[in-house]
Length: 564
Image (cartoon, rainbow, N blue to C red; front, side):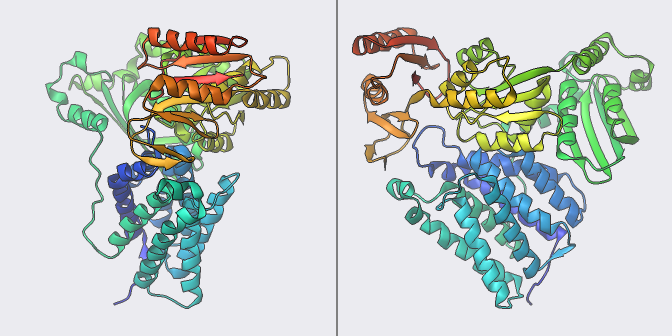
């Protein structure tokens, strides 16, 4: 018997199956990254993006279509990491814009939702490239529209043909993007999208699929700790009160309010769960002062179903202790919060993404207010960006992503921010970010500083040295697993088995007659003596150029070298 409708329960199952399938295949997707660096991240970024939505969806009980759509849309939006993750979140957002208006989905509605998904994702990318996840998504919609116009009503046939065509488009991506053909791979983002759709397809067809994901080590640790709470001494319990309540909202939460509320709860506790729909918010938090959670929640509406359990003691009088008086530490937290909210905001604030103790200290020394730990090895999410913006007490906040794969998440956070003017400086490397900060002028306007800082990113060349994790061919260079690679702003500059030679060849490609300064940032896996030797060799090779050496402490990349 043919099926012509998908209800909220089935859509939820399909999404969770798709998320689980992506999680299983994430390492395979990582290996499809064109650059064979030891931090392939497309699979990881897409998985972490969709897992944020998965967690929100799995916390719902007997949801309706609107609740399902909100959970997967807002969850993926906040959890979006990297370009691939942001594009995936935009595809989901566009799809749910249409789906949320209906109790059931048929061929016509799904086709309209797919069109909305593609349009939303393309708008999020400044310079869309064909041969990417966008091409695969567009092909999927084209096939769906063709079947719809042909009068197809049977969802099984419709879904099977749409997914099969998506696979065909994916296989054609190397013909559309030469760098994929040279590397001998299909687009990793497109592959990730198809893994989601294959999982969803299996769930629709009634196949036995996984919809439960094994927790990560950290979350497993938390669950074990909670399960064995009774065996812990009171000194081992960091937050003593298990606090649960419901907020009856005055008006629906927007994304920023939800992020701000979660960020506040994180500042006073852990084991946080916040599930929102248009009318209520269910809250769970372990904290030492439930009163602070209640007081913040009252900003958004009335409270009900308030429940507090003392995890250290089982005595009733301790359960209601929060009503009788706040501890001195809680008073200090309040005082700090009052100072933060009453202190006059400064004109300009700065956020930089960086990894490595030395690099982070450099950014702080030149005026950055808040460092988001991350970079090529771990792309921060949109929510990470939103939390950082909230912590910088300034009217205008500049964000330095310092990685091309983080710019879209920063832009998405900028678009969500309602209270502050956020400016994203499109820095793609650490040296570009440093140069942008140096070009900031305190007495200039936002517009002039934006222009000056962007110009600063253009005045520096960057080279980064790491190693190859697989054999491949790219930028007309044959690369063997274990080779060292010198990667420049626009591609691979040098390759070989000897690291020092690769460094010298890379710098030779970067230095020209106008160059005056070479700055070397050596990583956590490099000995200082070896870095000093590189500095000496470059000083000898370029007598008219000043060579500086800094301990960056960055992971993955042995050296980051800038030329100005």
